[in-house]
Image (cartoon, rainbow, N blue to C red; front, side, top):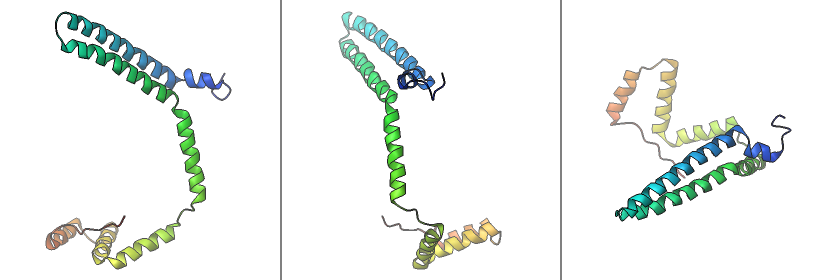
Length: 151
């Protein structure tokens, strides 16, 4: 029986991911039970802080059970988020590359420091400028150009 034809409960509770989660929970719960038993012994021998720890370990075990439960049932949440993402992407058309480039060019026109920075990057990419030139410009201007972003 492969994953596509197996019942839903088998896919949820007996998949490799689920078996690893079951094993982790078993190890953690056994560790918490051992630590609780040990701390009760410490507390009964006269160490008062042991009573606090003997209550803390079962609380940690309960927390681990809640996390295990959430991890076992997160497939529905993931499916809902994926469905919401696809419906949202269908509702809002994506901006084309040319419109994004137009927005960048408009931003450069409004900010001469950004235009100079982008021009230097273009020249560096083409091999027309050297990194030493960039360092010289940075020293002359007192640091990197700053770009303020709105929003």
